[in-house]
Image (cartoon, rainbow, N blue to C red; front, side):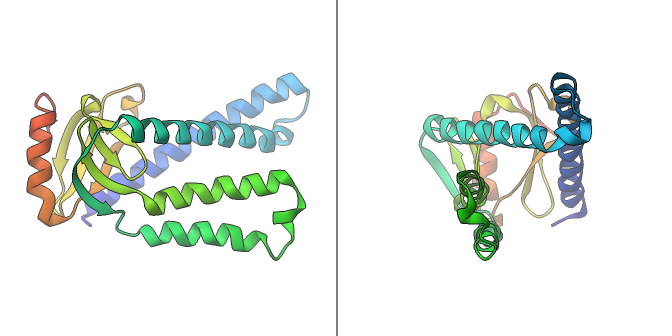
Length: 198
C-alpha cells in the first residue's frame, strides 16, 4: 500500500471520528437540556441513540444496496484482511460470555448481536462491479455518485463522491486485485463517462 493510500485512509478515519464526536456531544447537549442532567450524564444515552441510528442506517442501506445493485459484472473477491473482521466479531461474543454479561439481560444480548453482525457483514463482504454501481464490501456506491477517481500505484482505486458530505473530502479507498485493474477501469469508463479522472 502506498503512502498516499495510507494517508487517505488515515484522513478518512480522523474526519469520521471528528464528525461522530461533534454529533455525539451535540446530542448529549440537547439531551442535557431536555432531561435536566449534566452533559457528562447524558453521554451514555446519546452514544446509545447515535449507535442505534447508525446501525439502523447501516442495515437499511446494506439491504437496499443488495436489492438494487443489479447483477454482478465482475467479482473481485473479499476484503484483503476479511479474517480480521471475523476475529473481532468472535472476540466480542467470547469476551462477554465469561463475565456473565451475555446472559444478564436482553439488552446485552441485543448489543452483542448488533456489534457482532457489523463484523460478520464485513468478513463476508465482497468487492464487486455491479450493473448499478460498485459494491464496496458492505455498501453500494452508485455510478452517479462517483465524482472523480484515480488509481494508486498498487491498483488501489481512490474515489471522490458527489453528495451531501462531499465537502469533507473523504475518498473511497478500494484495493482491487492487480490482475483485474484493466477490467475495472474499462467498466468505470463505460458506466462513469462523465466522471473526472483525477
